[in-house]
Length: 141
Image 1 (cartoon, one colour):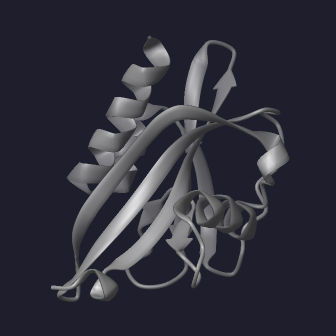
Image 2 (tube, rainbow, N blue to C red):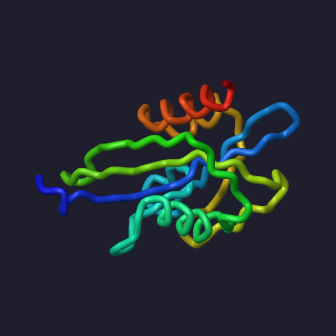
């Protein structure tokens, strides 16, 4: 399949530190099977992955780039969606104010801050669970 058929998306794995614990933000979709996912979305024409990740995070969770410290951790997932290849690039970003409120868009019906194990349980997809585990290892360095 040619690269112009590939679906491209980007997002941020947002975490906050609460005392000594790390919590990750998951959003529950208001469509389909109501799965839990970090804020992410498709690239607009001419948009790069990082710009899309920041735009989608602001649209879906209400967090602006100025509220986030993006780390050096980056992960790319590749999988099939309805017979088309899809590539999603995630960056790990710390919320600078752990009490800043989430502002959900119409695309999501709920959000949850949770530790690694619950985050992996909620995310359901093995490749996404591995991204969270790798992010946790990165943060433990």
